[in-house]
Length: 52
Image (cartoon, rainbow, N blue to C red; front, side, top):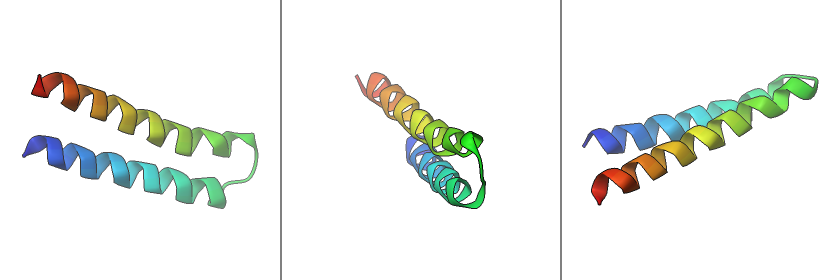
């Protein structure tokens, strides 16, 4: 059950990163979607390791 909320939080974080990408000017805007994608990858790997 807790893992499902982590997935939802990661997807929301990624969506906010993509929205900030379009809202912010400059090279720093690439950080937001990359941070969101990295957090999603970490949570997916964590969930897979926990399920083994």
